[in-house]
Structure formats: structure tokens, C-alpha cells
Image (spheres, rainbow, N blue to C red):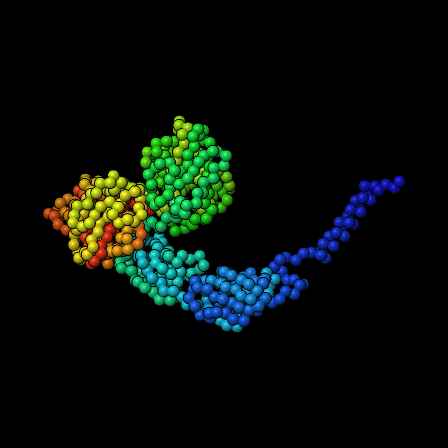
Amino acid sequence: MKYYSNKSAYKLAFVCSIGWMLFLSCTKVKDFSSGYDIKWPVPKITAITPVKDTIGKTMTITGESFDKVTKVSIGVPETPAEIITASANSIQVKIPRTVSAGPVTVYTNYKQTGVSAESFTPIFLDVNITGWPTRITRGQAFVIKGTNMDMVLEVDVNGNKIAVSPTASSSPDQLSVTTLGFVLPDQITVKITKAKAGIVNGTSSIIKVENPSNFFIAVDPVVIFDFETGANPFVAGNSGAISGFNTSGAAKARDARYLSVQKTGAVAWQGLGDINYSTPVSLSTFHKPYFTFLVNTRGKDGYMQAEFIQNGTHWGMHFKAANSSFDYNLNTTGWTWVSVELKTDNLEKWSGSGTSFDPLGTIDAIALGFKRGNGTSSDYEINIDQLMITDGPQKPVVKAFDFEDGVNPYSGTATNGINQSGIATKSGNKYLTVGLTNAANWKWTGDISKAGPIDLSAVANPYINFWINTNGKKGFFQLETNQSSVKWGGDLNSSDYFVQTTGWKLYSLRLADIDWSKWGGSGTATSLDVKGILDYFKIGFSTGNVAGGYEVNIDDVYISDGPMF
């Protein structure tokens, strides 16, 4: 029998390897997007309909050989368009908001294209400003609110021109404008000077300019969970914990639903389940982001941990003495707001290579893990609602009215009562209704009054907050207080002297920004001391500019340190 030596075997293996590599190099599979020897039919566009239309509407592209088309763009420069439906000879796309004029191009994954002979001309939407800031801070960004804000091309800040280049990710509801590097006086006006179409309400009234301080104009919160979709995000695993909406017997918090998690016989620090939020949250416009939520354990032991994932690093948040009034146990006897600042000092690095949490970065995902935490009871219960990222903490200081005791504090001549309009409640189970069938302008119909003294000396940045719903009608009211023998009055809305909503709307007004007028008294003060003592606080249901049907539904009247959300 003939044997091969190791040396011979190595030579044979080497020769075979070379041959195999040569074979592979000759038969290499081409990338999916590279050119192909197979002659796929080239897509051809014969017509686009319409050739001129409003952004956000649909366009139909007709032609042939669209079977392999995977991408459509419009204009020069090209802007990708969302494909809604597609067939071999017809494609329907949504006209992008940032589109430019030009031809339509279709692409296949085989490097084949079809270009329309016709050009498309977009019709853009008017910019309508609905909310100017009343004050801004030097060197910091501020937000202008409105509709079609992604159509803005230029803003003038007291003569400083700022070019705006909208992208597909630009918000249609608000525009962030920087003041970095500008020398601004104490009062300015801001104008929208260029847009892709018309401009409505494009010039602000006088805006106050303040030096940097601890105060800022908060941006709108990002709601993580409010549970109003009816989908339960809780995953219990094998813990045996049960969850559901409004199942514990706790009173309603805000809107219709809250999440309950319960377990009998829970062991300390046993994982009971979790909920996950996978939509990225950008903090770039926030000043001081906080993790904020409502909690109610009804006197039992309940706890959870929060996890924030940023750039691959997992940051954990406990609720403990260092960052809240809790000690690894969220024990409460009623609904309580919790707000903890999102900063490295309040977080633990659970995994990853990051060295610090970026409060102006992006949170890639959020998870909440439910555990018993500290405490002695094995009867675990937690109810949560309104989980948000807020710009600043939620800090109610003085509860004026929430109407949950069922007592009607209104004194006056208008039709009034608890839950009289038939609308859904916003907070808890009760609200106050005040209405008139045929109101006349500027009639004081009555008021509700919170007795004092109300000491605001320890409140850094006092706000008055309330929820309003006029049920599609018009409503109005005024604010009144007394301080050092001077009666002061302010208006809810001093531009139109009425408000109109079709649902509940939160008003959060900084006391220092309200245009207080002297309504009477013998005192000599020339302005209200918003950090002083108020003898009382009154909401007067004046009809303002309302003639005819008048209705105000009001709830949760609070004085807070900073705005409420």
C-alpha cells in the first residue's frame, strides 16, 4: 500500500486551495445592487399625474416595466418620495414636503432608471404662526409654533437674518431659532421674512429678552406612555404579575386609562416584568430634561427602575433620596408627580463604554423594569400614568381647585355645576362648568376664589396652570389677586379676549409674564411682586369679547414652580 508523507499532503492541500480560489474568483456572485448580465427590462415613464399639485398629496406615475422599481425621487435636487402602491405599469407616491421642481425618476436595484419627460411643479403651503414666545434668553434658542413651519426659509431676529434649510426631518409644528452670537436689546420683534409660500401672522409683538438664568421657556414634553391607545405594553414573563388598565381600584389620573401592575407574594427585588419604548427621543431642544410620571401605590409597596439607552450605553435610574423623596420604594397614598433630572449624577452606568449621559443627545430606547424594591409588604402594587420627558420638573406648589371633592366653589349668576357639559373628564373624575346661553360682552358673571395667604417667596419661578375646554363654544375669564392693599387683574388672552377649544387644553402662564393691571386699592405698589404673598387668588368668569353662547369647563387649577405639563 502506498502512503503519502505529511510533506506531500501539504503540497496537495496547497494546490487544491489555489485552484479553489481561482474557481471562486471566476464565479464570484455579484452584489445585489451591481450590474447584471441578465438584461432586465428598463423602466419607462410615460406620464405623471398631476404635473402640479400640493405637497403631501399623491402623484400617479404611469409607464412600463415597473416590476423591479424600489425607489422614486422627484425634482432637482432629487427628493425621495414614499411609495404608496406599485404595479408593473403604475406607481402611486406621496409628494414630499421638501420637494423641488423637476422630473420624476424611478430606480431599480439593478442600476436601471427611468426619467419622466415632464417636470413636476410643487405647490407649497402657507406658514401660519400660532405661538410667539413672550420672552427669550440671550444666547439660547427659542421656539416659534405654528403650522407648516417646515416651509420657513428665513427668520429675522431684531435685524439679524437667519437662513433656514428645511429637511425631511424638520417639524411642521414648530421652528427652533438660535440667538447665539447676537447682541440683543431688552425688547425685540421677530419676523418670518421668507417662506416657500405665504406667511400668516409673520411678525411678533414685543418679546422680552432676558439674561441667562435658571429660568427658560420649556419645550413641549415627549409623551412616552399615556396608555390611551388601549394597548397594554407590560410583559410579565414568568413572574405571575398581573397588569391591566384601571384594574386596581385607584381613582382615574389623567384621561381615561392608567396602567396597574400587581402581584401577591412578591419577593424583594424580584423582577416582575417590564415595558419598552423603542422610538428615539431627541433632547437637542431641551434645556433640562427630566423623566416625569404620575404614580399611585394606594399605600402599598411598589417600585420600578428606568433604563435609558444612549449610543449603546445603558443608563439606569433609581428613585432614591439623592434624586427624589423616595427610598427605592414609590409608596404613595394617592396620585403623585415624580420628576428626576436626566443627568449623569442621577444615573448608573449598567453597561457600555460611555462615560457620561448627554442631556442634549438622543435617547435610543427606554425600558421600565418593575420590582418590589425596598419595603416589607409582599402585596405589590403600582399604578402609573403620563410617563414623559419634560423640559424641567413637574412641581405643583399650591392646589387651588381640582373639584374632586364634588364641592362647587362658583359664586355668581351663570349656569354652573360639576360636570355639567357632558364632555369627558381630563384629570380625575370632576371639573367645573360655567355657561351662558346668550352672553353679552364684558359681563362679570361670577368667580371662584382660593383664600390666602399664598406665600410664593420660596417659589423660584411661579406659574398658574389650568385645563380649559370650551366644548366648541367661546369662553373667557380673568385673573384677580390682592397684594399690599392693591387689587391686580390679568387676562387669560389679551389679544382676542376669548378662547375657543374643541377639547381640553393646558394653559401654563408665568406670573411674571402676565400683563397685570391695577384694578383698585389704596396701595402704592406699581407692579405685582410675583414672589410675594397673595391675599387670595380668584378666577373671574368675565365674558370678554364673547357674545352668544359662552362656556368654560375648567379643571386642575394649580400654582407651580415652573410650568406644568
